[in-house]
Image (cartoon, rainbow, N blue to C red; front, side):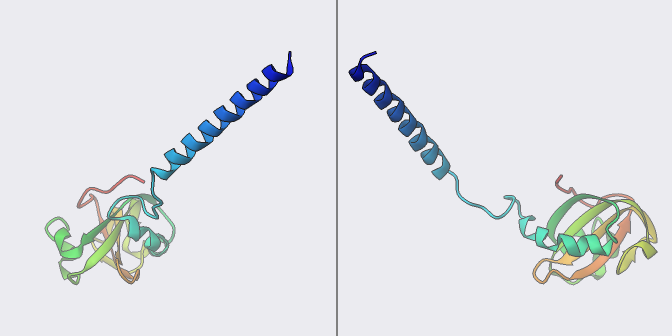
Length: 140
């Protein structure tokens, strides 16, 4: 091969590599950095350790929901005593008795432990036991 042909080939390879690098850089700039899952429950994940501790790290986490506590009162009658504020509700599936959880309320036993954690301060509010979920929870 002659010198001019090798030089031309190297120039094409460098040009192609530069085009690929620029394309990847532009594609990466089309997305923005996010620190949440894109759901309203995203901030609740900071309280996951509190919720897990309330059920003594047992059971399977079904999902989490950020909601006004009184909105659940029609579906979970024992929740009517909760203050009217926003809470993060963590649903754990398992076999539960009141002695198995911290701050138990509701039924004495159930298939689900619903852990209510304050959305702003992250402190445990209550743990409700029930045999069915009062609302839809997102899969994790």
